[in-house]
Image 1 (cartoon, helix red, strand yellow):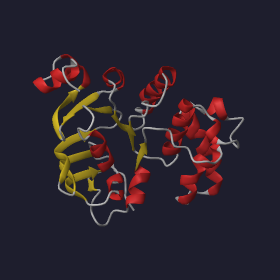
Image 2: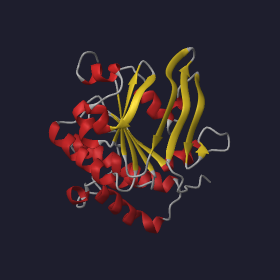
Image 3: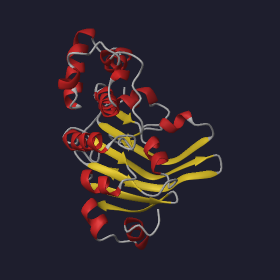
Length: 256
């Protein structure tokens, strides 16, 4: 088991370094993530944001020759300890990817798939599906078509379905890797509104290239550059009075 406790903060990294062979993805990163807060990871392409995000629930395990040093602590436990089951870990730390990736199944089956594999009680799955879709602000749009293909949904609906699918596993943390990059402005607005609602129940970490989006949705912002953390702090402070010249130059468009 991987018991979830009320350790504060819920998730943190301590001097985390990720290498692909000899190539450094991120180096010596220490960040704390708190309950009911949205943390945005920003920085130019290739700076290590997604590498870092994937390290938070061991998605990098699937990449050959990856080497990880330092610590990632969830509820006070090192998630890279040999005693931790990565599949069980990902039930507690869910992930939503850049492009919507619904299974070629019905809406109902998309959400039921994870709980069934995790051996949730069959009797609770219908209510779990409704609750997850409600939390993802999708229930009213799909309640009469649960047994139709999820591939018939719009792009924005598919992304909210993927969020509902992650929520159905009852996680504590939601990781989002540019969840709006493939969506139109209206769908993006729906997802941003949803993030504000979800943060009441979850610790949320979001990678975004959109500076306006980071300013709108996050409480804390961390700026990455060349695989290193330049600075992190409250979003208002980062955007209005950054401490480092590299941060100011990025936010003002001098590079990126």
